[in-house]
Length: 253
Image: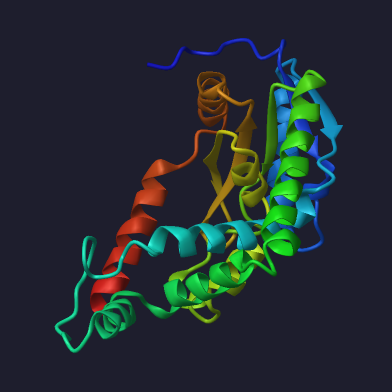
């Protein structure tokens, strides 16, 4: 059970200036600033902070994620784990057919990219450099939290929630590159974060904001998010109606 926070006057809320990107929708930006003002009106200290290596998080993620996928998926050879094909011409043929049948195009692409980054001639230039960049990203957060900031307040994605019919017009990798810019750095740094639904857009779709906390301070993060959620009183009933409409659309299609 999370404790109830009644006084935010002792909190320091950080607003990362690198997250104010040109692609950020005016609705999300307005909501972000209103949320900051809400904390300030409650007595909290709200300051601008810098996370200078944020822009490298997406590229860093692509290298490290695909390398990890390639390593983890190597075990699925049809002998001990997962699917096994019916081909028994040779062990090598069984391996190849099993992996051909068992992995979709996205996983195959990640395995190929990951194995490329892990090749002996590429290891230093890609994987090791990505690990070093990851450390720089993590250090940015360490420096901010060591300056006295309790939590960071940021957007979750660039705009309102994207309808499914719009989302599938572009491939998943493109969508991820566009909308994960506010969440990937958190993953690279290994920090707790939570996205809180705040309001509905002009189109009636959910808008959310993200809170990022210190390492191993999950309870503090969730307590602050709980306080904020109570203040904004997001229309849960309307959100449930949106979910029901989406499920109805999927069943019809």
